[in-house]
Length: 361
Image 1 (cartoon, one colour):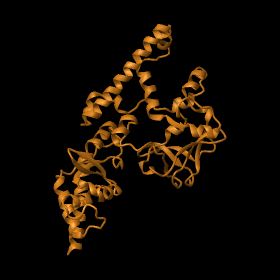
Image 2 (cartoon, rainbow, N blue to C red):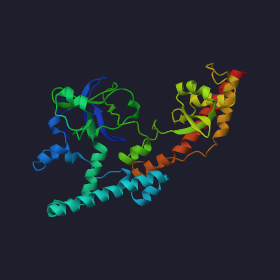
Image 3 (cartoon, one colour):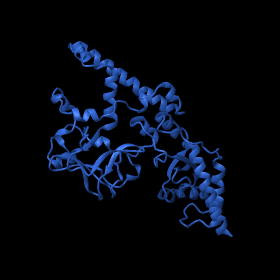
Image 4 (cartoon, rainbow, N blue to C red):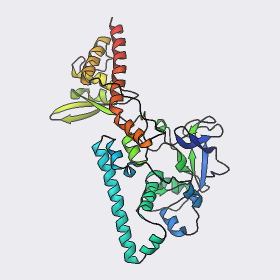
């Protein structure tokens, strides 16, 4: 699809899939893609201009199939190993089927059923269109619309399909780097860089703070090192220690009259400092109100408690080749998160124990 003469990116096939490739240096804050607002899809625009082929080029660029979980077969869903996620996918597909049946009944009541059938509007076509909306829409706030002097719809957001925007892939590392899309006063919607890119780099946007369950459910992909995938370690602590632990990123929970520190473990930080301090506090190695740094001996004792709290797992095997079976690969990424986190936890923990032991001597 042609991105326009002002685009600083081209559509490119990377090893990880199709996305945007920078054709030159792009600086943070620089606009690299502009699309006229008139070319964006909305429900109102589709109703007004559905016959004239105004969106034909964009339609041709859209994928013909999707890998979001509602499209998976029952056998494929079972490979996920997560009952809640499987059931959510089943419910979504059942909901789409129910919506389509209601649409057909309404069309028949209005005398339009034949027209839909003549134009190939069957369940598969409806499911495809629903999947386009699930995975490729962009929300624009009322503030952006007001600033650009554009018509305001009802509600807090304006949901659009923007030709070209849907080619941009998700990079979770862009969390907190600033907005990646905006509306300009000249009547264009635009993508702008939230970090610097060199020529040849893949230029990405940030979808949302989503773990792999959510990414696979709504977008059809999973990331091996997703920073938003986490597991919690829960340790009982004195309520007086809450302020210190919360500063370190822990969340506090109360159950059956006890206070617990919940510390998120990720693949990039499998032994967070909050967990080490909580392990020291729950053994009364330091006073609950203390802000003092742990001594090497105290840290070593805290690490030993953490070591006992999580059993070692066997090393996870290699992931399937994504090029040969994408869905099987994604299922394996989700299924192997626990073992991969356990392996990373013990590897980092043992390195910290060696360092603490050396410092204590």
